[in-house]
Image (cartoon, rainbow, N blue to C red; front, side):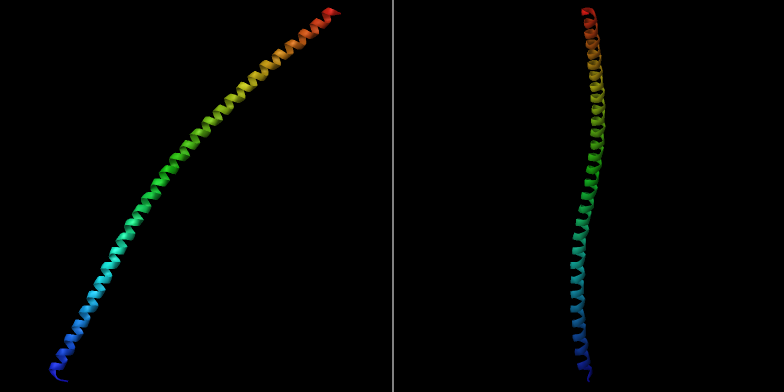
Length: 107
């Protein structure tokens, strides 16, 4: 081979390697852009998860508060019901003793 042939082959190899390099750079840029998009989506998803976590915590606190209120109301209703039963029992006892007294008086 002559020097001229070697130079031509070297130029062709350099051109081919330059094209390969350019193609590889384009691929890297495309992959970096995709990676950036995925990272942005991941950040948004992470923020969404944190937001939902805070909402769940807030709702759990509200549920606990409502349960406490419900238990208090149930306890108060139970006490009121017991008082009403006691009042009713007291009035029933008086009526029974009054009937017994009336019966004794009639005899």
